[in-house]
Image (cartoon, rainbow, N blue to C red; front, side, top):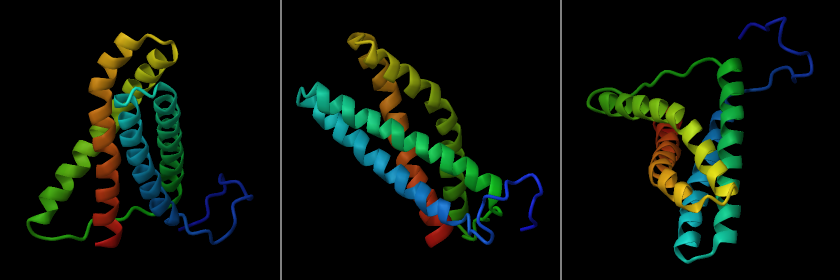
Length: 151
């Protein structure tokens, strides 16, 4: 990759930004686990644990987004090398993941805001839409990473 004169000199020369893809997968997997744990906590009536777990999941997803943007700004794109029947599976997952990832951001923000405002009934209604999308985006992010970098 050619050094861009607009990139700050503080970046270590020779840093391999591809490692951020692995970090992203870990952040997505962690967010998934935290969301599931948050759901279990609220089903058991533990509002405090639910709040902490869900805010931790938000932090993981925010860290993912930052890491993802840096990775795609600084690393060469990686092309999917799978052939045959797996190609449409990969691209179906990728397209649905990308579309829902964009949709989930305002949903998460609204759901969290309602929860923090203690507007529980509205929070629950929004969470019923937000949670499955967030879980899907988190887990498909890991699956896409695996298919693209490890398979």
